[in-house]
Length: 479
Ligand code: ADP
Ligand code: MG
Image 1 (cartoon, rainbow, N blue to C red):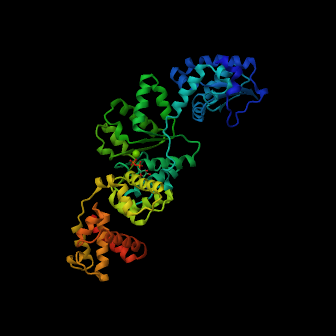
Image 2 (image 1 turned 90 degrees about the vertical axis):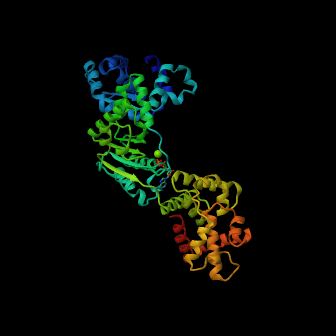
Image 3 (image 1 turned 30 degrees about the horizontal axis):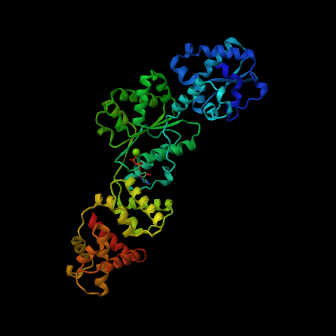
């Protein structure tokens, strides 16, 4: 390390208040003292702690009886200050009673960032490797999706409890419930809520450490730590966080040693009064292949489920998403999608994105027609197999008409309008083509069907009575 001291300033990027004026350059005596202490770290704190935390500590300056030491990240700084700084100061004072304080500062990514510069040649390889390894380790927490915030989360009956619980945890200073366990099917917003908690919590408590990772990543890190005999550092790393979020915990099932470690970490964190948030695709009691103790401990706090979404919620999400996309998509298309893509909100969003992208490329307006073409493959798998006969029956009942009126050539308004509604429904709810629909309505031309569909789309926006008729019929047909 000492060989790099002379050119250190050339490649360190100083952040915060870590500026080191020339006059604070430590004297030869202080440098010698620091080197001696540094050498003793392994003996004093053990190999694992040394490698994970203390190794990158670098003497930066000496002023007003203060020894200034730099480390590469804020996380390390906090951890060292809390856990090792007092002892290190003692060690210094044993050698020199003038030293009164130990200041740990962050000198960020110094080595990695500037390695491309002209100073590259003078940076020892070992120093570079260390910095990389550490950067990786401290970046254990997975990145957060900037779209997954509370303000982008649409609330409905199915997710109201989970949302309220998440908000409470994010905004509360104490811990309202610990752990918070959120469960529900694929694509229903579990990860979204977790990220939202993390964003909100970080904003409110910038000084706290929030770690978010998938159960798979947790397992991977655990196994890696086992192999490289860094299990002590692993435990300390996890136990040092303020909030731990583990996503999709069902993936831990069956892996005994990981479960065991997770359980211990979990208990330790709860004992230390740290917040834990967990998601899974099912309730704690239904987690198979997970140790009974762990299952029961997981349900100690609050267990909140997310139910499959309702039509209204899906429509709400689509409307919000449309606004975000800034794309001109008619209401009838949103209704159509909310009706057709029911199982998974990720898929629903995917469908909307596809339509928007298609419109953007072709510069054509979005209609029900283009939507059905663009999403053919997706829609086929979601087809509920509603028949045109069924639609005609329901519509004629609804308007007190005879079924034969659906096929008849009569054109009076009180018959023609319901017939148009039925054609519109047929287009929306079945995958029949326009000519096929036309044939089912007394052999009408496909342009007649197209006109009917457009007319009703238009009326839904303008005439609340028609909008309500369509709504009631749609429910009856799909419910
Ligand atoms: P899960 O983790 O439950 O599988 P995600 O949280 O990844 O699901 O959600 C899938 C997609 O659906 C994400 O893009 C998310 O933003 C979106 N989503 C889910 N629920 C909602 C909601 N209530 N409001 C807005 N978007 C949602
Ligand atoms: Mg998820």
